Amino acid sequence: MRVGAANLMRWTGRVLGVLLLQFFLVIAVGEGVTLPSFLNPYEKPGLVAVAIMVIGLIIAWKWEEWGGLMVIGGNIFLAIIKQRLMMGWAFGFFPIAATLCLMSWLLRRYSHSLLTK
Image 1 (spheres, helix red, strand yellow):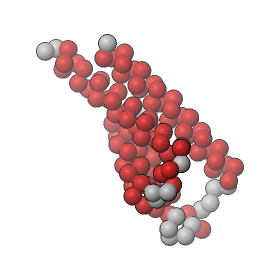
Image 2 (cartoon, one colour):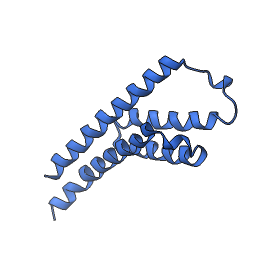
Image 3 (cartoon, helix red, strand yellow):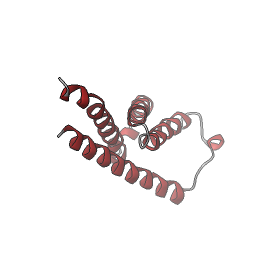
Image 4 (tube, rainbow, N blue to C red):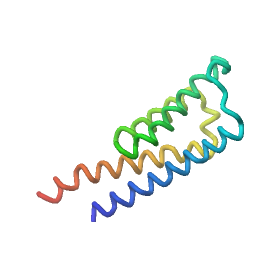
């Protein structure tokens, strides 16, 4: 039962992550990618936070715990430096995908020890 729930969480988190990556790719192509050297100092930390979250979503495909932690960390960093940006609906899906990845990892990691007791 726990393995089935872990698989469901894993694939739901992955699908949500792919949708988020596609969304940000469409925005980046549509708006045009700006080189970080052209951004003002106030915008650069936000770019770093979003990059951490996007890279975390990619890493979560192989290492769910590290990718999930990167997304959560990037999200917290973004919330600290850009509170208004966090009100956007798209940024609410990043922690959902990360939580699904982390829950899947926890269920996989500890389900074997729980079943053998």
